Length: 281
Ligand code: DGL
Image (spheres, rainbow, N blue to C red):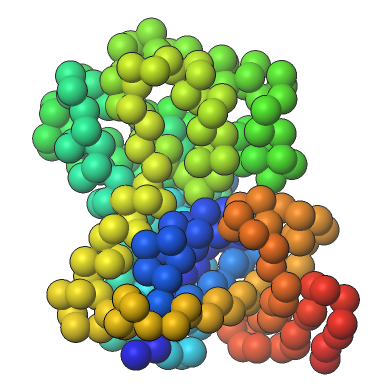
């Protein structure tokens, strides 16, 4: 009955952790954010696959009973490796997001926005095209959304301008369902929704994933008693970025008191930082 291990390239995966906490409050959650090597979305496949293997092993070595790949880019490039190699079930964010989009689309015209890596991998497009046909799927990289979300510019004219630039082709193409295929985009849901209009369904892959995690645990007989005491959350990062406390709280939805640091090269614990300023070693 170990924790659910969740990893991401950085702090964006806290949006996924937030949904897991909401859906599975009795589970212990172990988070690893590879903040020393973020972003993954601009990096090539080989690098992302190698990083994802290290990140996932870190979680398995700490007793994770299920590994959740919160990062869309890592899910796009590494999910097959991880599912093949790890001794525990592994879930990525892409399959649940695709399933939800296919359930919710009315006209079968589906858009995906994501990092450049995720778009270039073609993973979302292949899975969606198999169901609705390639002419009805449109994918677009929206790299500037990542720093805008991290800077908290979630209701800012610059973000509106960027949204216009990125999303106009999707709106013009009559997309009726749009997958937010990146950990950071749920923070920009309001601006994205306003631009796309009320007719467009926005699919948040974090919500879809939490549902899938619940099912996977139940099927494997690994779920904790949902009526039990609230689970613990532990945070590990490979670097503590400036402003992490503010940004992390924005992504998670509540403050983070304490994180541990990890030296990714040794994939091992190398210290502890108390963000309330108490210290540590
Ligand atoms: N976590 C990444 C994703 O969901 C976004 C940030 C990055 O590029 O590393 O694809």
